[in-house]
Length: 381
Image (cartoon, rainbow, N blue to C red; front, side, top):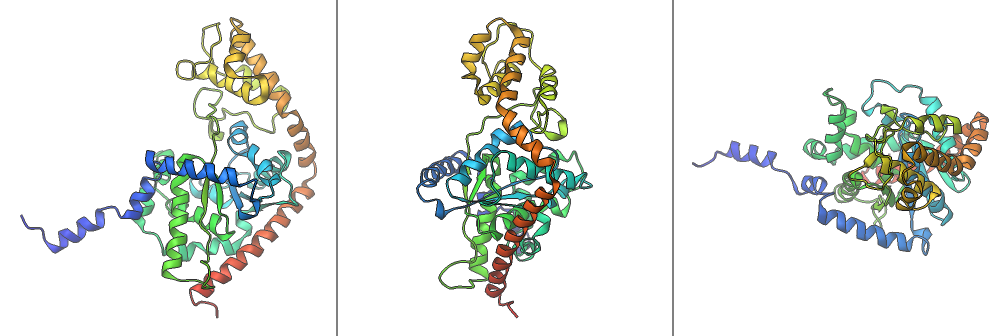
């Protein structure tokens, strides 16, 4: 049967574009292997040529930072800064409302996150800590950027799909749908070309790269010698996957975390409730004994030795001995960070001054980028 022009058009509209397939395939085996290889090249070059890079990382202040955040990304901030790389840390306060009805105690959490960043070694004299909502020129990029993406691309973004599923059947808001574009604006406004991500975030980075490429093709350049936006690349870390204390995915919303701000006593109380199993002989078996292995990994990350060695030392001491050892390791490791943090939260004026300085720096760069955008779009009048 011969199809009609109308049906051909409908079929073409439903077929994924090359860009959509690239976004959906950003974490397939071949793409992931290429991303890992490129990330290793960048890692080798970073200490040799730090001036080539500007790194941007961001955290949503939806709750207090916990050990998953620390071992996942935060512990890398100071070493990257100390290499001489221009380091930018985004407190993504606007992104709190992508999947929530309100902002919660947003001021407290923004200041808490600022204190966390400083307590792990971020130096505001060498790094830029800023709040999303305080940089209007960066957010203004959403308008031209939205002209460069299609609705179907956004729906096909794997992370948008996952975020929608996590909202438990609620209708998708426009902000949630355009979350990848918002993240692209975060990355591109400050000309970041290095973004630490996990593999599940690669589609967002690919979206940012596509937007930068499309802007150059459609609207042109403010200066003929270079595009308006730099192309960001992924820095793929090898962060261990830590489970929550209940054996499920670590999450602020589940209340199964150990927060950086917790005292030694609060940490001990939380770890005493951690899920284990009934076998008294402690072994490191992530597949067969995930909860026990999770505590062994946590103790290992805090300097107690390799997980297998810790398990051998405990032997048949059971879950009690494991929890005591893990508690001691965690509290010893985080003692100096917590002491520094306690000093910081006691001086709110200092935290506000750090944010004000970072916001001013971010606005300076954002205004410069927006001027280039307007010039490229012939809107500089």
